[in-house]
Length: 129
Image 1 (tube, helix red, strand yellow):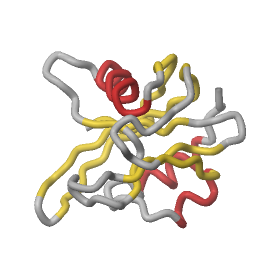
Image 2: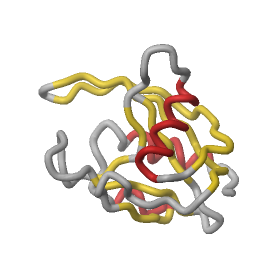
Image 3: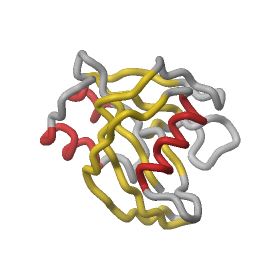
């Protein structure tokens, strides 16, 4: 799976709430999804961001990869920082989205698989769009 940490000019990062009916509904995550056969991580991220948020990926930087074991499934997640994108993000799958200051990400109810990304993002302090 691939996820994107979208950054705005104010140093905030976008997170999305998992909609009802999905695994771990109501929890927050970095937007993204599955990598389809034949796709690179960047291609999958661009597709997912277009489908979920209605934005166009302009630039992304691979930040880290991790594996996480939930009680009912294992995931491998590749996080990319997205400092440049076109359009205004909106929840096209009915999901809530919000911008959170980077130093307040730890206060959010993020999925366990996404929590290690908080420290990596805070250390990275990438340039925003």
